[in-house]
Image (cartoon, rainbow, N blue to C red; front, side):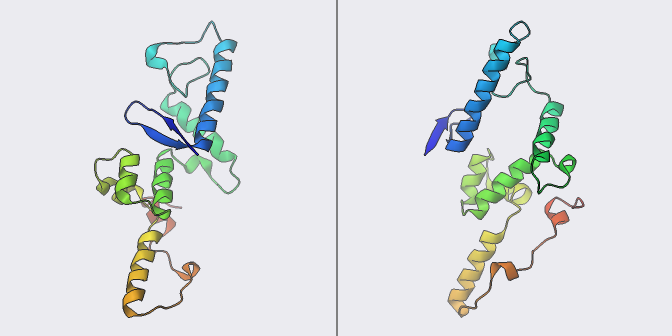
Amino acid sequence: MLSRIAPRRRALIAAVRAVEQLRAQSEWQAGQRLRHVERWKTTVAHDLVFTTRYGTPLSAENVRRDFRKALELVPSIEDPAAWTTKELRQSFVSVMSSEGVLIEEISRLVGHNNTQVTERVYRKELRPVIQTGARAMNSVIGTVEVSLGDMEPLFSVAEARGGRDA
């Protein structure tokens, strides 16, 4: 089941789990509003989903700090301080790609006017493209059993992160 939310730029259908988390955030925010009633800043411009404890917009530093705190809760992430919020966007694009969503659709979801930036900058998962090519060639020249686990990566982790060390 999906739920509809309407951001300012475009309508978006969100997964139920995302909507549940947004509702939990809204409840937390309502509690903060009551807890800090004298200091709470409510204006039309500040009618935001994510705010400081006093209802003001989050600064970039607030977002980075809270993002890294959240990553510290993920056992498989060794160095949360090395991550940036841009990697959320890259991960989203890569997951959508690996799930077989058309690149044109992914570009629209992330707000790009065309697929060039989506493909060049954000999509790091190429396995669906590799699989499609392999399936096409197998139908032309015959089938060879190959496990996806046997495939060598096309680029290193450092290359996938834009040249930064892994």
